[in-house]
Image (cartoon, rainbow, N blue to C red; front, side):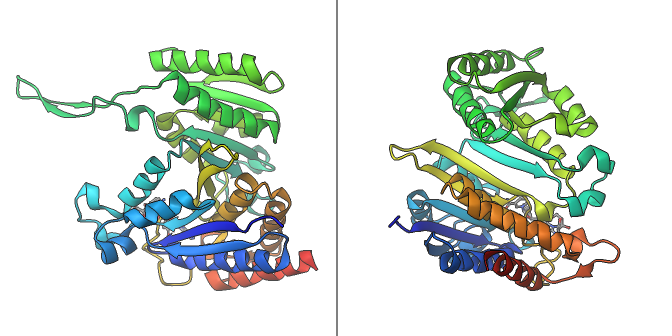
Length: 370
Ligand code: NAD
């Protein structure tokens, strides 16, 4: 029998614990009803960790995260910790996790559910059936490059500096993730940079093209300047299958793609590191949204983004595509039946709480697995 899957749950702050408690119910359901077994450990991150340990990510928590088969995170941050210095803020806990686990590939799917077509600001025909995946490089580029800082100039002015820098290795490993994903989807990758004005973009394009020639001839590769990519995402998003891009452009393009689909409460993500000798990748799964202090504690949070993140975990960490499909089908059916949390509420739909959305999803799972 296969070994149990080791999950570390870091619920975090604000609505994090609320949405993660619904995910925990589905994990337990899977544990009882499907072939896979989970060992779940819980720990603190963000403000919750600061309050107990004085740091947003304790050393022991980091070690647990590195040892786990996958980490499920809720959200971090909130007004209580807003005045702390930058290095103590709850968000540092999340950044430290990504950095220390070397999670260099950030996967952000943008899927438009039939029932939510009207929630998009774009015309229904532009977004109906949309299913694209943005792979953003997460540990390099402008956000980490040196030199960086704010410097005083002799003439009394100041200069702010960040550096866009990528090595061959950094480009190839994230491009490989995109090509591998495309093989399991529509077999198309669009690589996006600004090779027209940036040397790092020229190198990016050359290395992606080289890797494609070496190992991924079965996948169609195209290139697009990042500014055009932003326009095309809004004009005709269904032309894309997988988009791979750097940290800075990926930050923006993934948010643009996300908004094609409606609400923040629906958007999952995965961050992956290198596979070890057994093929296991370090991995963190989290909803795209933050801790939503404006609704925290009110039972209004939509748990679907967190649940879809767990579905990504089943698919990408455990190769349990059927179980991931089951969760996604349950989400579609519940939305199709008109059950909605406030963030995706529509005329004529039934407004439910976080817990009631969890109830509806579990009932749907029961029905499908009967
Ligand atoms: P946010 O994503 O927390 O909230 C933005 C808006 O979307 C709010 O009106 C909120 O009520 C709504 N919303 C978000 N998720 C929702 C859900 N699941 N269901 C229903 N409505 C939802 O972004 P923000 O307000 O800019 O940030 C709040 C805090 O979260 C800050 O401290 C910020 O630093 C932190 N943050 C954390 C993460 C993370 O943990 N990955 C990401 C973004 C922001």
